[in-house]
Amino acid sequence: MRIRKKVVFGLFLLILVTAIPVFAFGSESGSPGEHINLGEVLPVWSCIPFACMLLSIALFPLLAPNIWHHHFGKISAFWALSIAVPFVIAYRGAASYQILHIIIADYIPFIILLWSLYTISGGILLRGTLVGTPAVNTGMLLIGTLLASWMGTTGAAMLMIRPFLRANSHRKNRTFMVVFFIFLVANVGGALTPLGDPPLFLGFLHGVPFFWTLNILPHMLLTAGILLVCYFLLDTYHYRREKPAPADPMEKVPLGLEGKHNFLFLLGVVLSVLMSGMVDWGEISTLGVHRSVQDWVRDGLLIVMGILSMATTSITVREDNQFTWAPILEVAYLFIGIFITMIPCLLILKAGGKGALAFLINSVQQPTHYFWSTGILSAFLDNAPTYLTFFNTALGSFYASLPEAEAVPRLIAENPVYLKAISAGSVFFGACSYIGNAPNFMVRSIAEEAGTPMPSFFGYIVKYTLVFLIPCFVVVTLVFF
Image 1 (cartoon, one colour):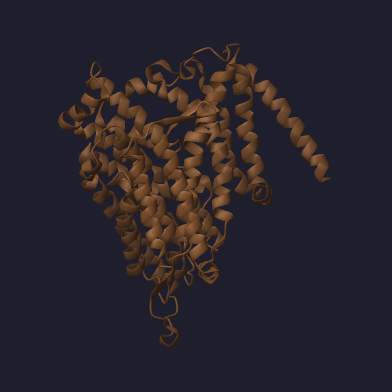
Image 2 (cartoon, helix red, strand yellow; image 1 turned 120 degrees about the horizontal axis):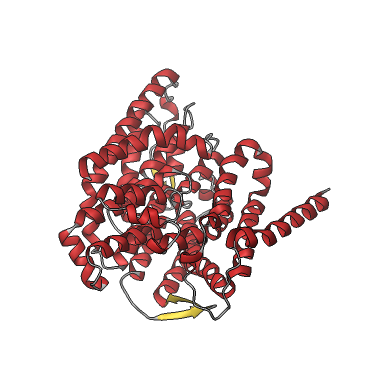
């Protein structure tokens, strides 16, 4: 029976990947040596596999949870191949390069960073009695939000999520707690430095001063303040309704940290990432994809930090921390599908006014447009290239004749509100969906593994994004943009 299912799956895949070139890409093709700007020729419907990938993440856990739980890796591979195979058939060398580029330059560093932070933070155990009252929970969210800009949203989220879940293990309604954790710690808190979130680091690499992003502090304080107040009121309401039993004084255990040496490895991760943006050691080519030497060195250092954490941390600490590899494996399997299927979307977006989304790029004029356009696309696509697209759009609108080295300082000096809008939009809106930012999915996986039910993809958006985030962003728009 299992063999028959594999045969049917294989035949369906073969039919799909050989049929799509006719319908999605038409008759245009490029020879291996031909220089072609794919973003200018790809049609909008080449993004269909990406939409199907998102729908799979949204609907399978809801409609067919058993199939999804056992086969999500195969489903991700299916959609990745459904775009990769016809893409290569239609555009040959140009398409092969784009696939290799997103794997080597984006996906591998992405997974290495997540793996190192996940591994290291899993070796830090907070022991003791920490009772999740509204005040304690709000304080933990505040601490995580403040940490996110200095150790990255992923680092802060992986460090704080397990203690946060354990503190609230006695509570009945925990879903909203994890959602607000994603809002604040995994996204909004990363707005103040290039270490906080990948798009800001990309801006740093393109000439934005390291501490310039502190200019977004008022925007972050307003957003975080509104969300923290909403959380406290919501948690207080549920806490009073649940009336959880008070902790037994005889069972109280003093708070204490085990695996504290892992903070050194977290510092090593932060310094490695910072180093890769401050030095220039040249480039090397891997399968035709050029990457900076310092980026490879950074990835190597991150792997070393993770290995050292595993080697020096007691197995008991990880077991008591309920550490497993399942969440990082789920992210690795799903995001390879997401990264590959979104290639056409990113290429069209990067083509700007010459691509199929020209109507969107050309309509962006005011700071409000930049904030919402950058934000909405960042909620479902990779926020780093989205940031760069609108960053370049702003430079082209104001300083088309100037090189980047001159245009960026002038944009900061003369039209900083546009850069603030792009930066805030790319960071804040990452909280709008599970795939909006790297740690969102991991936090969800860790929470579900710990027994906390999480909303579906659409449930998250309808029950929380539309109710809490969008009104908050409207307030930010009215105040700042």
